[in-house]
Amino acid sequence: MFRARRPLFLPLALLLPLTTACGGGSDAGDASAGKTVTVTVGYQSKTINTVTAGTLLRSLGYFEEELTAQGRKDGLTYRVAWQDYATGAPITAQMTAGKIDIGSMGDFPLLINAARGKQLKEPTRLVAVTGYNLRGGLNTVVTAPGSPLRSLADLKGRKVSSSVGSAADGTLVRALRRAGIDPAKEVRKLNQQPSVGASALAAGSVDALSQFVAWPGLLAYQGKATALYDGAELNLPTFHGVTVREKFAERRPAVLDAFLRAQRRATDHLRTRPIAAAETVAKETGLPAEVVHLYNGAQGIATFDPALRPELIAALKEDVPVLKEAGLVKDVDVDAFVDAEPLRRALPNLAYPKASLPKPELWLKGQASTRTFDSPAQLLKAVKGAPVRAAYVPDAVTGTPWFADRAVWVADGSRWLAFMTRSGAERYVAGHAGSRTFPYADAVRLAS
Image (tube, rainbow, N blue to C red; front, side):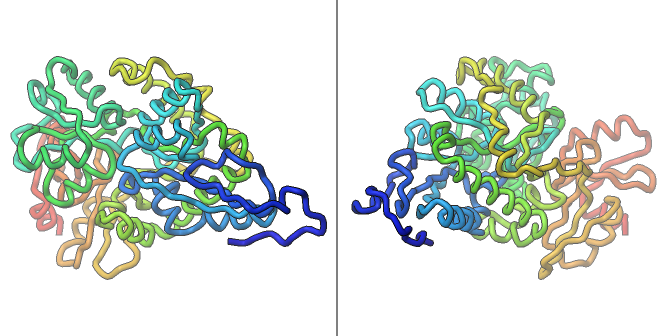
């Protein structure tokens, strides 16, 4: 790391032995030149909608670069300690213990983060967003292949694995209620970590699994699950974001600014080089790049941008009652938790990305880029006989991208439409005389 040049007149503190901040957290100590400050960042490598504040950011080294530049200004040497976790809960526990400075997690865990911080007198702030979907498409309910379950209504009396306190569990609770099912009395819900739930689904000990990115896509890609319910049917935004300890933000505003600038650079990298970003995240996490791209690609389920969009904050407020009912929080003052000032300070010209509907997309083997198409029919014609690595198609109603070979295809006259779920396709067919469903292979053959 860069060390500032020695000034002509040294303050007394610099004549003493240098100290190093370590063990997590960088509140302690003063800002004497030459001091090493450790900034501890908690992230979830496999929750891939946080990659611009975690896995991808770490691999690119942008935060370290920004801190090196900051060190030239303030005479400090900065060191980043990255800590990887499976969920947001341990990040919150470490933050409220003063051991993690900056963390990233989903919207429901963010609310728990806010509540715990206030309760334990170690308040936190939401300062940025990583990835989001304005309809809620980041959460999905899946069943095992060949399951007799065809719609959410079929879950009545069944066993469902979920992670209580997660956005995916919030999706499950809301969706069941819309289907006329009491989630507390008419479904046997098992509170399990995603990996445990995935194993339970494969073993047949649960009938369905409700989880967040990237588990549904991963299981579908592996042929171990079929989508039963698309979270985008709720039409309620869901997102992942960046939280910071209030004490840290007040003591080290320049460091927080450096993080937000680095996050924006990582976001730009993901947008301009989506395949390279997917390959990087895949290498770091062990997830298939095809699954990473399903969520994080240019036509993916998530949109990446740090901006604290009003739609997302409004959705966060709607999430509070769900967590209160589950007994996970008493209340959360969302307005006090959200702090837009650091983004305005670090990225004064930040603007929302333009909204656009995902297009069908084809990734061929050996290619470092993908092709997009204006219609599902064009995609079907392009995949026939091609060395396909992955093909993606948006749901005809919700717009949620899904693997083309895992989608349910419908022919309506000369038009081809794709649906993420069987129930979505059946609803369409019921309302459009003459239309019918087809397996993917038949759709490819007939469209060509």
